[in-house]
Structures are given as structure tokens and as C-alpha cells.
Image (cartoon, rainbow, N blue to C red; front, side, top):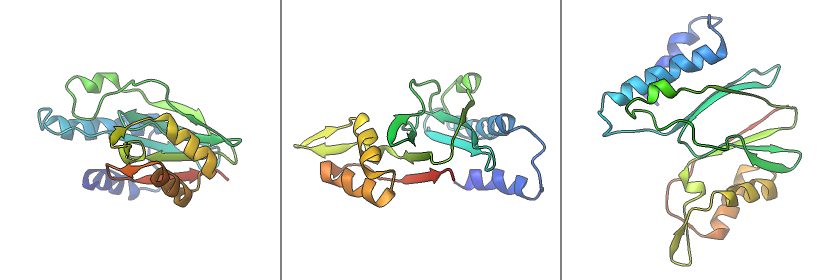
Length: 170
């Protein structure tokens, strides 16, 4: 968090960042990956970072082994990723595998992101990490965070911390 704050505050002093969104995310990624690589693989971090253009809805993002983000469009929830393409920050040789993706968000779309705690539930005395359950929960809740938390808790006991974020395109 401190590192991201430092990166963003360096750029917030300017009225305009003099680079394209994909290039900016690449710079953020390389700086974060460099810092974690200094720990020689003893400290790794999953991360999903993105930029959304407020007027057009164009989103640029990368995902380093973080739980996949969910797009709720027309009451249907889908993962915006469908394969693992990047490992956690700090993995050796990871810097060569940077993939900044681009997607178009439409008015009414909702993005829901969350930590591992959304999936890792104790059900019937066993850890169940069914990731697809979260898609169903996002659909049934309409992407509303308080309802998502209630529904997760109705399935089982959380075994990990839970962080959620929602972005809706107007």
C-alpha cells in the first residue's frame, strides 16, 4: 500500500500523466515487481491493478494471480479473466510475462473484485474453494456488497480475510 501510494503521489502532482494507460500500468507493475523481487521469493504478492477512463469506459488492467474480477452485465456474472497468465509479484522471471489487458465497460456494467476470503469457506468441516460460487452470489445480489457478504456467510464460515470492491459504470 505504501509503495502504491508513493507511485501515485509522484504522478498526482501533474495535471496529466504523460504516457498511455497501458504504459503507465506497465511502469507500476515493473516498480512493484522489482520491490518484491528484492525479497528473493520469500515475499510474494497477488495483485490486480487497473485504470478506467471515466468518459469512455475503457479499462486497462493486469492480474498477478489475484482472484479473478467479475463483470456483472445484463444480470449475468462472468470472470473477466479465463486463464492464469501472470504469477505473483516478486516471482523470478515474472517481469518478462507482463500482460496488460484492455476491455470495454458499458453503462450499467458492474465490476466486483475480492480477496481469497470470498472463496475459501469452511462447509461441512472442510475447506471449499469453489470459485464459481462467487459468480452465482454476484448475480443473485445484483453486485451489491452488503448482500454479497451476507450470501458468502450463508454458505459457510470464512477462513480468510475478505475484502471487496465494486465499480459501477454510469
